[in-house]
Length: 297
Ligand SMILES: [Zn+2]
Image (cartoon, rainbow, N blue to C red; front, side, top):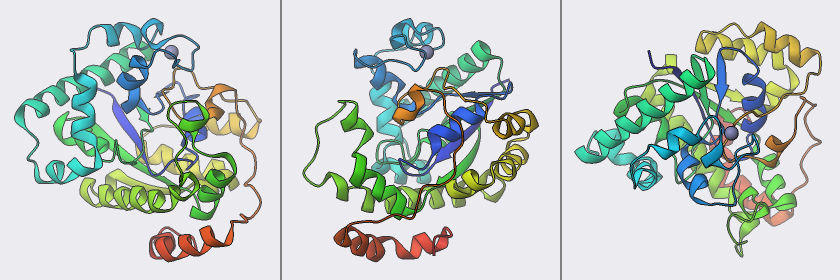
């Protein structure tokens, strides 16, 4: 039987790396990070899986990657990108891509379930431009059992993180720094989280859960019990590890935040954000209605 997928939707810096690492400690769950980028990461020779191996040599992904057809990575991007979302919603994806995508999704998730013994796979590819339609594609084209965890973080904290630290992809030398780098997360946060809400409407209320990262940090036990009920897994062992300040490690995660590179514990929320005035004003204008809808006053 194919595994159940817990898909983490939302924008970058929403805390998905930490949530991924914590969930990965359950014997029933295997976290994969930003799994949508597996082909792209494997093609960029300098990139490594969090296990420390090049993707081609990784015990989890190496054999699977070696057996995949040429052009599969480009097909995945074509199907999942934000400007193809209309086709997914209308059910008008080209037949050849739909067939290839089904083969990709079924093969990848069954392979990970066999490798790990887990029956729930966490995929935190989120909802930015390149992967906005992924959970719908996995559900409708690949025929997999997908639950969406829409993870959000206060937009002021998100933008502050970019103002102070810049983009992960720039930090890791994946792309060059743009002129308006620190402004990108303002429309980025709104677009990705609008997609998250849209996905929730499409997939149905019983397959969608919204969680604020702030609530996960302040009361992880309650947040983990909600997630456990949502995916049908008992997470009490994981909750005990959180309470004992157990360090969580990444295993075999693709892409994501630099935090994945060393074991993490859960620490309280950072201090109130202090954004530059221009950023604060622009953010308020652009994000306010959605921010309120998501519980950020
Ligand atoms: Zn690995």
